[in-house]
Length: 301
Length: 90
Ligand SMILES: Cc1ncc(C[n+]2csc(CCOP(=O)(O)OP(=O)(O)O)c2C)c(N)n1
Ligand code: SF4
Ligand code: SF4
Ligand code: SF4
Image 1 (tube, rainbow over the protein chains, first blue to last red):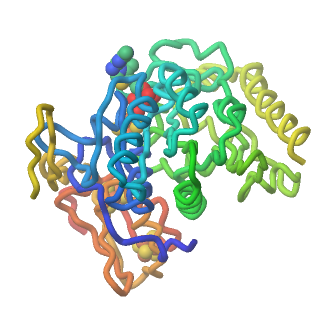
Image 2: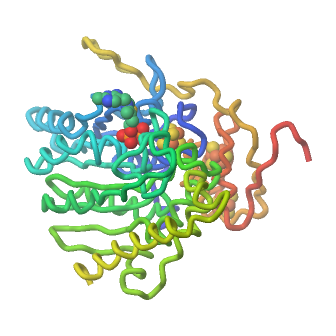
Image 3: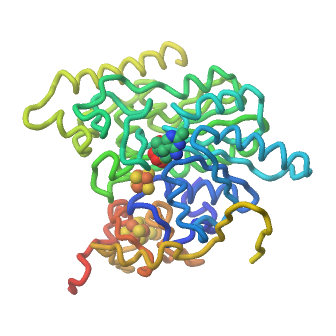
């Protein structure tokens, strides 16, 4: 869908508490455009609970329920059941959590809701850190990245939440990125049209968390896809389809760009370049991405 | 606006919940209408919803709330938006 065909309605009210250049706010605008007012969003502890702004006011012009960190999917299950009992069948129930709240602390509630077949959309905005509490590592933080709890760079590789979700064989799951509004919007509408549990994960580069300049949020998302560090795909009834540039990378119609093109703009990888270039760890990052793509090609080509 | 009488904390929608966030700006986006090709990239990517879209897809910037992130200028392919330090007049 072309940008000009996207809805004009705004449900993010200006003057929120978000940092300038915030990817979560950018993504929320799109989610609200796609689902409109007839939705309930369940938000656990994360930046979004702050972006909502301070009591007694909120910057979100849609119904939101705030809940404990680990409970987004459990809370959404309750909301969905309550709406069902009231006969409100057309209300879209969304659980919206960060990667910390999804990969780590909320994974149990999420897995439960997916397994129970709850009719809702779980959306994870992945900024690859616990940003709200000041940049701690999460299961989504990439190898070698600095955070306040991985001062010399993370020593483990990130886990692949998409694989874990697909192991539940739900009707629809997808990965998208804030930099591709057409892909993002289409996946949101598709998820909304399907009954049962849906999972969407959004690549959301965070300027203060990744230490890049705030005008580059969209650029960093684009580079994540072009380097193959992030993949655009959707999985409908266990059938995988790769989208956009990711499809071209999968089919080897284009080469993915080197990781260096992406990480050199991010201060969180600064120690890989100064005082001397750490070619070993940069290569390890490259090899990990190659491994991921080899797995994709083995399974889905 | 409908108020709800339930025993929990409820916040109500308000424009400018954190005040006039335009005061956060260090750099200000300046729009040059003559260069604009109405692609609406700036509009869809502005995190703050501070770029207004008219019926004919003309855009304008709401300086009361624009936080000056510069994403609009960075994403405009024809350089119809440029960033200028606040207080500096050309
Ligand atoms: C049980 C529990 N542990 C810790 C916290 C503190 N806490 C609040 S938000 C947050 C980080 C959330 O990270 P993530 O889910 O990645 O979202 P982001 O902040 O990046 O948007 C933490 C650790 C909490 N609220 N509850
Ligand atoms: S820390 Fe990152 S995700 Fe959180 S509000 Fe700021 S820019 Fe947005
Ligand atoms: S500078 Fe940032 S907040 Fe201001 S209009 Fe441009 S994108 Fe929006
Ligand atoms: S991105 Fe540039 S060309 Fe496109 S609508 Fe905005 S100002 Fe006009």
